[in-house]
Length: 78
Image (cartoon, rainbow, N blue to C red; front, side, top):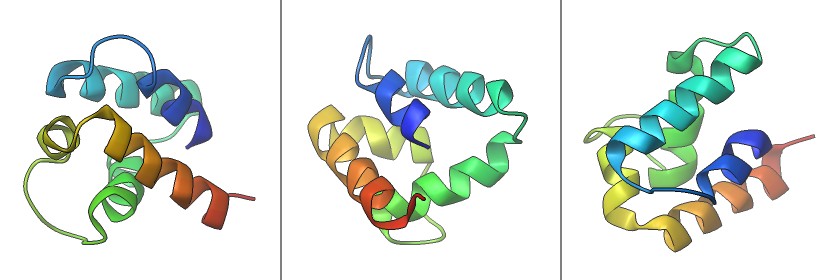
């Protein structure tokens, strides 16, 4: 998760680039995007269901999204 957070801090921050970054990050670690998407959704929205994740992250904006993801990393990542 930390690797994805670091990558999201750079470059464009729109739904398409967010999706590409997450897919690249999960693929690099041998994970399926769906598994990471659920963790990201919970970290960003505190809900298991909702609007499109990438679009939600774009609407929240980079600062708020990254703050929520970093909080999740600090709290949950070992």
